[in-house]
Image (cartoon, rainbow, N blue to C red; front, side):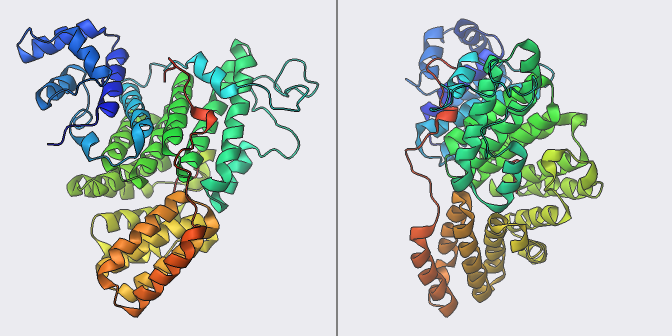
Length: 463
């Protein structure tokens, strides 16, 4: 077994330990009792958490047992992850630990770190004589309402709708701006105002994180989702907290981290309990099914998909939360088709994926078009697959979604075995011509909205 990356395991062990309120000495004592040996000291625990050393397979099993971690969280799943860079690994591990803590007891509110809020808020924008969220501004909004920006500012509801039409490359800066606005208002509000602003912080952080992830900035996207989870848990909104984890799960699945995606989706579904509407339950079951299928856990994927289909029969879109406005019959059908392709069942999948057209926006057309092309390749319909992939590629350019573009570039590998076919040659020429125009994230970017200060703790359209 390949040893896990210490940059991922270290913070994860520390977060799980702190979630139980244990010192390093107490964890060492518990591990010694579990292993039946007195040789482990708190200094070794410290070395693990600081990533100086990596616990062996035996100690990872004992860690999972004494910290009550789900199977795979401290096992070899991190070794199979292909996420780029230590920043993403840290963001992933801390979010996984927090999700586990919340799912274990969703009634316990998760604390928000004031340093994180202060860092998000930052200084007032240049050129503003007064902030509309401050006490001395003549147009100060009512306490607890979503802070309004200058004329022409995109509001949260508008940003959600724009996410249907455009991708994160274009919209992530607007999401980051909204998050700074809410954080600034929260910092300046009194106790009552803070309580009223927490729901806005939860929704804004989730949307900003989704847009960052769609733009290709996965680390900052996961950090924003962690903030959204904390804010939702602080208000006791179990339904939205579960949705935050489902959204983050989908970003990890798109980043080829099926194991992490499965852990988050299962935590979200377990945590919502009876607080979830039928639509949210169906959505989270779809997240579990897709992640399980991508992780090669076919029986679990089929079981979750069957449960999602049964639950979807009871969904009434008009009664769902406003942040699930986009979840309708066509979307659920396309999700089913996508999972069936991942499960290797393209026959029933292809008709379902044909239900999503360009009328739902170029990103949806690009994402589901890519899955449709994969299904057609599995069926041996190579010419049709190449044509569908070409149309999806054009939609990816229009959408400005690095997530959709990455999946379509990967489609070239699936068609490589058929490179002598005329349709595939046309596809490869189109891909070569389109590469300069495909949205992709700068590798070094990490938006200020989610950078953590030293010592800090750590879409709504999600189709």
